[in-house]
Image 1 (cartoon, rainbow, N blue to C red):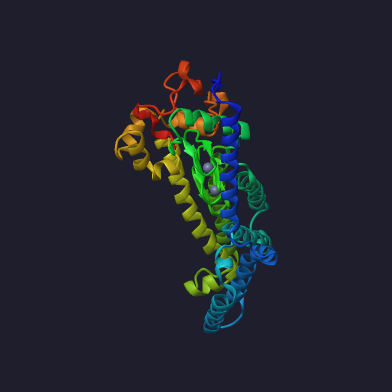
Image 2: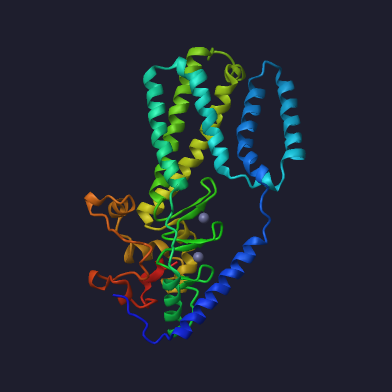
Length: 373
Ligand SMILES: [Zn+2]
Ligand SMILES: [Zn+2]
């Protein structure tokens, strides 16, 4: 049970409340220094990737010479760079670029490919889309594990830490003024602390953390499979409708929209596959988040877990193995996944009897504390 602070007088409690209120005011005034985006632009900016992709596809598929297409593309680039592209365009959420790509993939499938492939291919394409959308929406819109505490909890925590010698930045997020759970991190993009933080994903405009990490991995996997299904359909279309004995230029010019979207399918498929492999290695073999892997040397130095020999330390101290990591990460309760609440763990338990958070010292003097982020 949490040990109540009996020494805290009501006056010291109110002064901590006052301090927290001043801190919040300062934080809000800093945030308000940044200009608000125009409402009109907020509505139009997400449509831009859809329009640009349509114009590009239309130029590629126009029945004109290659030279004219090249000139049109150059003109488009000049207009875009000179009159459209500014810092607001650059700041468009990449998620809309992704959505535009997917939108035009659907259009191309239903207009061109569907009539050239067996109905089963379209059923697989649509069914897998549902899997992709499910994982995407869960990763995009679901709370990644934002750490929220009540004012009273925050006040009590600050008072306890002040009594024990001050606010140590390794224990407290000095922006949110909360005690940092193990493996959490403050996301500078979203201005919030997230439990078992992995990274901030620009393509999702969301943090990837404890609560949406498995959906993020599911999204990567389903996107790679989706690209393979699309490319498989595109090849079938080409075989049926294009003369593959012709030159390469003639084959790719056979149906430019198919070529244009296939090219995007290949690019997206490969880089997402690389990302997926990287995530799986981190999760299953290393038992680390992206943040922990990237900052391993810093954390190891801070918490005394060696200087950069991350994998060795991990395998000897903490990594329970590929199968257990898999079960825990995907929270497979039927196989005995651990039910760690990463919002409430402040120190790494060394055995079951010591697992109570408040029975732990704030900083372990043993090297297995390297996960504290
Ligand atoms: Zn924070
Ligand atoms: Zn974030």
